[in-house]
Figure 1: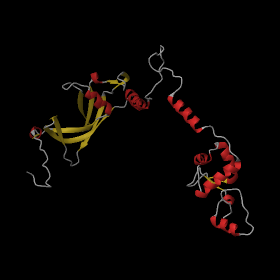
Figure 2 (figure 1 turned 60 degrees about the horizontal axis):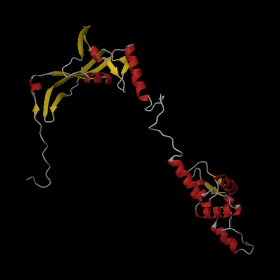
Figure 3 (figure 1 turned 120 degrees about the vertical axis):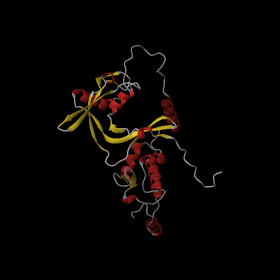
Figure 4 (figure 1 turned 90 degrees about the horizontal axis):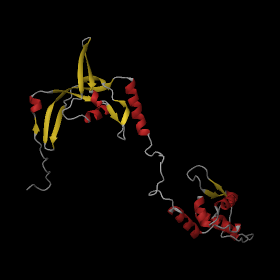
Length: 275
């Protein structure tokens, strides 16, 4: 039994080192996406192409020729594309620069084989041609195609898309409209009383909240607000309303006015003073 707090030992997988024993030297090459897709369509024992190595002024020039049977490309919908995969490619290789890279193959979940060591790494580049430019253009245009397209129907559809007298969202909207009722203009003094009472509690309101407080039409409410308030068009309180300076409620000034012998009563929920 393992002691408390001990970590379980990692499960070991046997590794076949036959590749190292045979001293197999390998190249690690980056492929274009279309080329790897074409290779995946080849049979397991099939030929995907040929390597050609030539000498030019003492330097090796390596090219790869794709098998002609693997040049057919299909679109995302599975239909044959109007372009074919380029056949001629150039391999640009370089050393591994002191790195130790190996190639492993997994034939089964518990069977690993070390095939060999990487001695050169590089990139497979297609030769520039008119066909390659058409392929690149197709790769750019393919993702930009809309997922939904308009199609012309040849006959009347009788099973789907049946017309309805009224859609559900329209029914819910009409029901809500009847429950709330049509907003009727109230007396201006009553609306002012409600507005002043609201602005005693908070300095800023958006128009939606004021409509809910006064139950007035938006256009009529804005007419009254333009007389007593200002709408902020910038800053942290953008798109909110506040009272003009001369209509703001000041508790200290209100108390002083009530104590004054010249005080007079007004028919509002509170007296408005300049602070």
